[in-house]
Image (tube, each protein chain N blue to C red):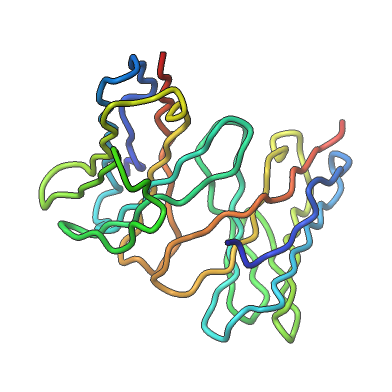
Length: 113
Length: 109
């Protein structure tokens, strides 16, 4: 069984560009969570999605950040007009029904030049 | 905000049992205690979880006090590969996981 797959593993963007981070949950999982980890800091919750629905986006910055989890395909975390402060590791996790343990991917390291 | 309190760091000799404490004095009746760990730069890894009873799996044991206000994660025979940040998390069913600062566990050779 494949685990949670995130790509790309590393992403480099220049200030002002857009970043798209993809997350494919484990097979059979319909709940996806995104977390951000700044250098030398803890994991911060960003958003919790179920297929085609945002359940909780209380951790998402109000501007430039958006997330989706369509009926078909991976979940996408989109950051528009990136700034240096967006440089971080972004982790995705999935669960089957939202009440069990979460399985995490290996993360995407975003570097903004 | 995280609802748990953990020591910022601990040391443990290789081959000995590592006992990681966690306080969660405001835990509600339907909230589970979860433990995850993060080995340098990797995605967090699930270890174990429980509600009221003590739990054991191939990785660790979880001891929850009778009043559920604290718990201890036990790694029975620590190895160098167990060096990581360990997070104790209190989570209602169906809710997101909120990570605190965790305990940085150093396994000493």
